Length: 73
Picture 1 (cartoon, rainbow, N blue to C red):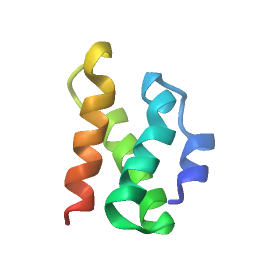
Picture 2: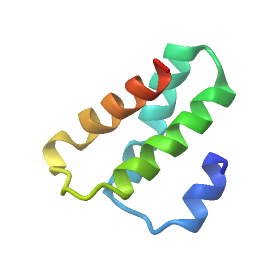
Picture 3: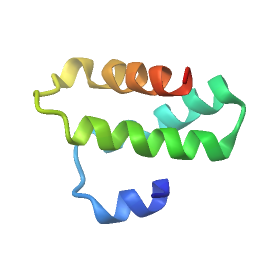
Picture 4: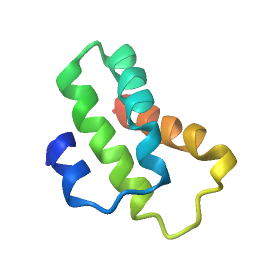
């Protein structure tokens, strides 16, 4: 599922405010805009479906860690 589709079909959450930062970070890591879009989508989906609560003060770092791990695959 593409990044844009995910944004419009899922409820908005606190994590969405960091989506552009995650995408830029992944684009930097991978050098590919297409990969950045897919990994950003997967990152937000994983954060949205996590069973635990994400602390607001560390949400951006949590998302970037997920994205980094996905990009390393």
